Amino acid sequence: MKFSVFTASTPDWTPEEAVTALAGQGWDGVEWRVTDQADAPEPGFWAGNRASIPLTGLEGNIGHIAAITRRAGLEISGIGGYARCDNREDVERMLAATAALEAGQVRVTTPALGTAVWGDQEPSGTPYPVLFEAARRDFEWVADRAAHHGIKALVELHHRTITASASSARRLLEGLDPQHVGVIHDLGNLLIEGQEDYLPAFELLGEYLAHIHVKNAVWVRTEETDASGAAVFRNEWAPLKTGQASVLEYFKALAAFGYDGWVTVEDFSTELPLAERTAGNLEYLRSTAALAGLTAGAGAR
Image (cartoon, rainbow, N blue to C red):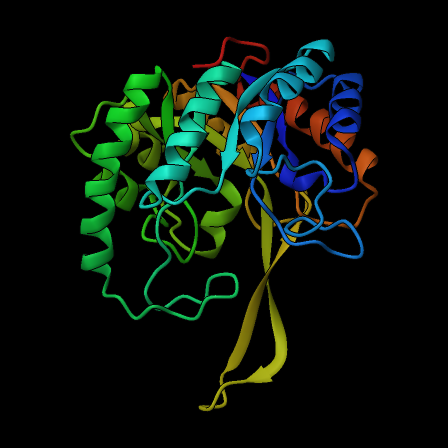
């Protein structure tokens, strides 16, 4: 098992600062966020993130990304892309860039639910079966193109999308080549929607389990009530140690399944300064992996 950090969670650092800091702390790799984003007066996770690589001009940036990562002594655990499966032009660009970077795997996103507000977009109202069937056709094409490039395209388990659970992702990818499509199982996202018992979910995914994202969250009761007078809760990101999910139990399930790939951290809590947060996360993950019987430093799948 190897540990990396997704640069969506390191917004204060430039790419050069990110690899220098992470290598100095002892991380094994970095997962680059690639997207065009809005400007912001202050660095933020989703806008003004200084550690993100713009999609615009990506091809001209590949050599620089590879060079700074290599010089820092880090591996690339994958590419955190935002190209949706039906945007074939951008998906093809992301697949080609991932191959050029020798990163091995890249996230390709699935559609938001028809009932979901997504970014600045209002709910589409499209029924789930229509979204799902279209995405399945798209992923048949994605799998073929990923095979062409010799890499793997990953579906992330993400709340408010058509693949919030392991069951839905397995259904989407069923019958496609697991050498070229796979699933990112995400501990924190599943607290919000899609939670299934860890080990059975890993067993369900089988060869499609390709990558792990770790973050944590909590549900907080607000002062509001709904129209019926019932309590209203909202979810918030939390540090790995204080969120509702047990990282130890998660790692025990990964050990029981025999997972030996990358674990990428994307900690969106803000209680601690960034450098303290990333260093503390690595120390905690290593000690927790040891308690769970996982072998740190094993070769990634």
